[in-house]
Image 1 (tube, rainbow, N blue to C red):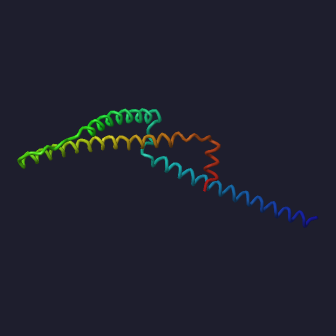
Image 2 (image 1 turned 45 degrees about the vertical axis):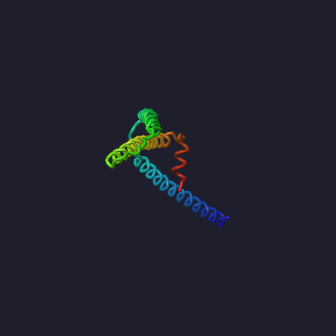
Image 3 (image 1 turned 90 degrees about the vertical axis):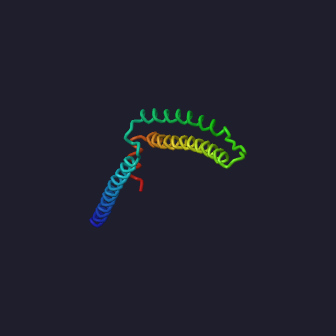
Length: 146
């Protein structure tokens, strides 16, 4: 009977040690994941802005994109024609005219692209903030994610 109590006590000690080891590993993992989450949040360039400000900024970028896209489409639809000219200086002038028109079209396209890229950054930040997670889910994720 004493032998059984001794074995049961030894098993109980091993179980308690296992639970203590799991608790220590969980605490270490929680702290590690919390620090990683904080580093990831601070690495986002727009994390300091409020959500309302970001939504207003996204709306403003959408309006600018619509305006610039209209200008880009109208400039792109206009064709610059180089007419045949008899003299070399007139031919050079025609070439310059076509080249200037092409540069304006490229510049308008670049303006649209820059604003679309900025809008994508703002929307990515809003998506990162929009990930709704309950406190319990967050705690469990931080505790059990390796």
